[in-house]
Image (spheres, rainbow, N blue to C red):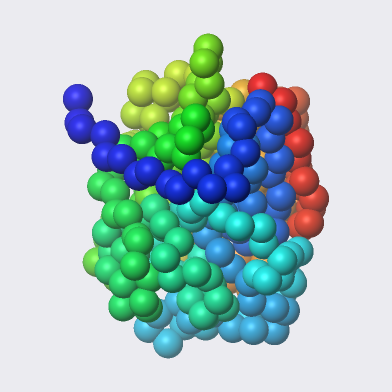
Length: 279
């Protein structure tokens, strides 16, 4: 069994862990999670409608939406979970305005890029590597899960990606939140439910991103396949309808979910909407 690394956060202004959680969908893959004593941000993207992201090799894409929250409106954060280094997951606004000492849990590739941008506390994980984050009595374990951002033949030109399993430990139970990251459905994902048969909530990066006709993130069909493979109690789709390279609209996923008989296992959030939950 691999060793679990440790990150201990300062406890000033910390709140006692409780079992009331909230998940605010800001846009793209950006979510603000407050749960069990932690405040966590995912994949910070705060560009505005009309702003362009650079996806490499001269490829750009304009944003079609605005973030539901400005970066200046964020509460104090404990850490960030970052799927990979692409502009629509860590943009110029985040690079300029996030606290440079904020812990960011991500891939080795993204961690190296973050250091070049002046961030001093990236925590790089390999697949299945674990990082336990504690703050006073609060504890969450983050495990990097498999991800592949496009067909294997393109692996050399696409940044490495990771999914994340967040396990919040209470006295008597564990709440598991799985974030797919920008992955396609492929065989390695089947190991996730083998290791974690009881997943409470999954955030699905959808959108059906296509560049030169090549699928780089899950579309409606693959999103349904991911639910069937991972088998979470509830899934929430994110990373859709925000950029022109997103070719699979949320409506297609909604129809696919209904056709698959999975409607009772999916919750939809509009940009700016909050999902409140109690464990």
